[in-house]
Image 1: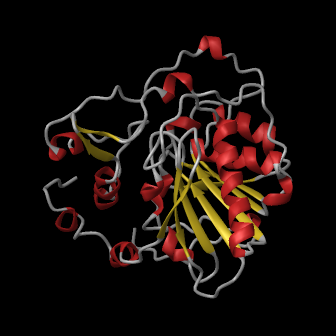
Image 2: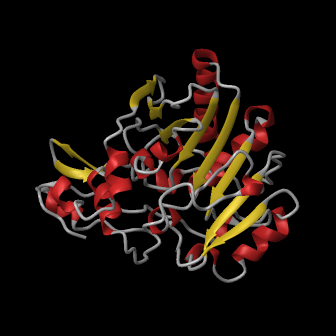
Amino acid sequence: MRITDNLKEDISNAPSWFLDALKIKPSELIIKNVRGNLSYSRWNCLNENKKLLILIHGTGAHKRWWYPIAPQFMQDTNIVAVDLPGMGDSGFREEYSIKDFGECIISIIENEKIKNGIDNVSIVGHSLGGQVAAYVASEQKELVNNLIMIDTFIRPPDWDPSQHEGGPLRMIKYYPEKRIILERFRLLPQQDCNNDWFMRYIADHSVKETDEGWRWKFDDSMFNSLERLFGYKFTFDCPALFIHGANSLLMSGNILENIKDMYSDIMEFKEVPEAAHHVPLDKPCLLYTSPSPRDVEESRMPSSA
């Protein structure tokens, strides 16, 4: 990954569809909350219809992961990419939980229904974002019309959290120069990614400058305190699709088979060749959603990556 003081120059080798997408600037919106504001971006549908596609990032990530991808859907739907609490440009909170993240998504949906007359909602979630999406689709079935989970680790109902100690994704440190912290950007779980221009772009938007120096945007206290969905079984009944990378470490062993055993009766499964856990980076030109996840296509987006 090339790192200089010029992001535009560093990603100049990106394919044209990627660079063209970044030229399309979304609206930047905030839902104010006393516990911490919620930041999200919105792209308006070119056909002014009432559909909405919500894109939810994974652990420690942010809405900018979706900026090159979201504009590809503007012909068919409105799009929202959200920063979950404690990540991206959303505020830090004293407590974090999957349920709280889900409530944030529900608040966006309700706001969109009131302000923009949205009457059809699809949700795509990568990794942690898939758990949030599935939780919303299970708890508020009437709000969600389609669901896609991307390489989401789903714990079995008998998962014992006491046997699996957590920890911070990265302990927050401060760096004197932006280039120094960008050189430390890594994907977790670690994997190779041939699309260095995509990594360089999201790395640039993963950091912020403070009085103490440059730091990662996420709240590192979240990763020890995040309340997960232990013992919870998803019960969504909308069309649903589970996309997973063929080389994903999170789907290794019997993990994927356990997920299929639990949910194959209510969800379709699709493997993405030559992709690891971070499918949006490895294969950004895969079409994630369609009017029905059961009829997933692969080619509406360009096929150069």
